[in-house]
Length: 377
Image (cartoon, rainbow, N blue to C red; front, side, top):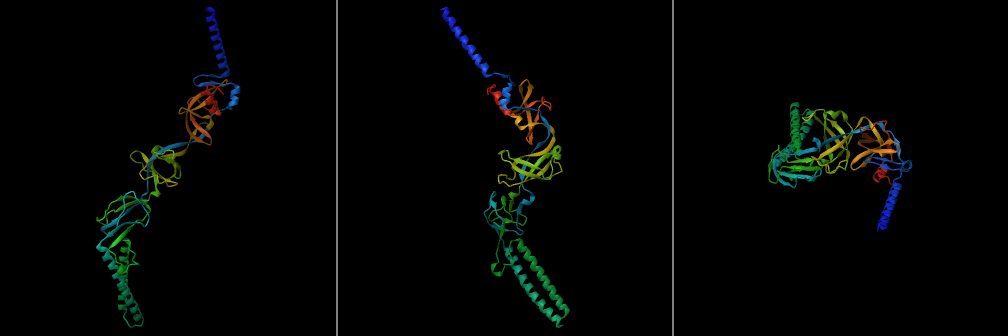
């Protein structure tokens, strides 16, 4: 019985020795702790690791801006009518799109008839006075008419011309074509036409409502002329300039970027000690609705900062790292804060790295995989 037990322990001991030898063979030249790893020279060569120093370079900083989408005052049109009347037709609702020249509403009133009548009467009187003026002019040239009578006919003609022109301008304001107006096509209604291509934002009338000359009937907005109104605090105003490129994005879809340029910078601060910066979108997008909140990143030249090649920075579990070379083929993961990337170099911030530090500048991700796999290659 003792011989049997001794044999079993001997077998187990041999198996344990064989397992330890295999592990040693698999990890030959590898020593790893929680944040460091040591490789053999052969492994460093096979991984293609390159070791170098961080460099100090001029990098671009990013200024975060917030604001809203809006349209300039010239793109918001209030539609009204010079004379009052009753609305007899309108199909508009807020949110509808209209085209320039499209019928917005039809207004009816007795005074439109009177105004057209007055114009046509003035036109006839002018033509009559013009004929009389021409007749008196010929008579006066032959000394068959007095100068006084000639001057009176000239004055009468000019008076009728002024009266006719004044009434013509009033009809033009109502949208009536005076050149086509005759006694047979006098109308009791006038049409209100859209002056722009845009969006109907307000409708203040309905069929049968009486409107006064001071009433706003509709508000139209030319949405293709949108701008971004961003707020920038006084300490950051010096970082912006006219013509500077900004990249805008919405909260709902931050991956979709819109390129814009600063057009105006208001030098007057508001109550929050911030100034308004107006940015013009390079290409209109219908998803940018007026009133929408929007964010923007503005690049600016920053002071000199510590940088490494982009290939030197790795990301793991949502954080950024570089591998510091500590000597004797040992590498240590060092967490860093990253900034902008300029000409293939990425800004980093770390309390333990400086210009004299040695870091892996190429194939850092290969080293990360080796570190994660415990050194197996």
